[in-house]
Image 1 (cartoon, rainbow, N blue to C red):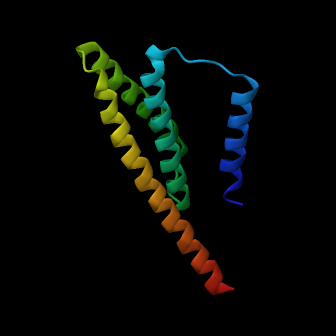
Image 2 (tube, helix red, strand yellow):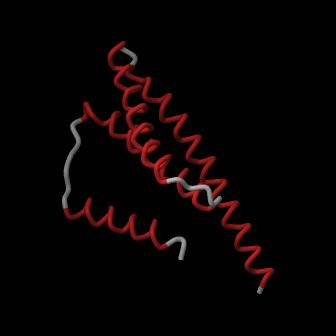
Amino acid sequence: MIWLAPICGLIAGVAVVYAFPWRIPIGYANYLSVALLAGLDTIVGGYRAGLEERFDDHVFITGFFTNILAATALVWLGDLIGLRELYLAAVVALGVRMFNNLGYVLRLLVARMRVSRESS
């Protein structure tokens, strides 16, 4: 049951993309990619917090928008000072955080499965 919401969200997202195709101007590609990665990082972190039973919706919402704005500002700053590849720093940092959180999520799910199997 815990997988139902992410799967439904993924299916809805794919359906929207196929129903309403649109193109991003190449000048905004770095901004969008970093903002998307920041959002995904926050979502995975929120999912982890939910599994650890310490989820706070205020922290999640403010963190979601703050992460997106901070990551996008880093890309903008890189463009401003002539370091167009500065977005890679945000990509690496957010990617590492997201995969660390995914590792914790998997460990928590495996631990829960073991406990439920042992209690049966």
